[in-house]
Image 1 (cartoon, one colour):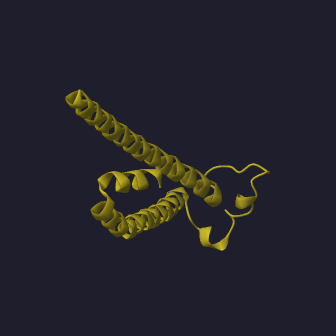
Image 2 (cartoon, rainbow, N blue to C red):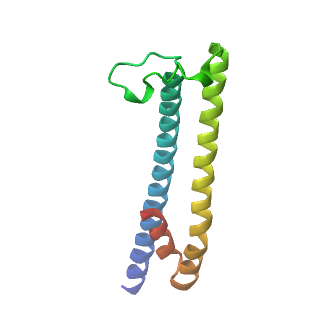
Length: 128
């Protein structure tokens, strides 16, 4: 009877590990998709700002932006280059911030893991 109880606990622990791992993979995939769509939307908006795409009347953010002096004399290729450089800058800043957040949070999570075990640290990491 005692052996059956131990096997049940081991099975429950395995299920918990599988669940935590699955949640982690799904979280990473969701974050990646969100980052990609956010970058694509930013490029779309920047193309409207420089006049590569037409703006509708309701879009206040791009009213009279393509006629700003910084875009004078720029052909379509130069405007596309400007959009790419601005979006690369924002992508770099977003990566830097997310990396710094991970760097700052890893030390307290490591200390929690040392003191209370890896389960507690994993649950805290996955729940945010």
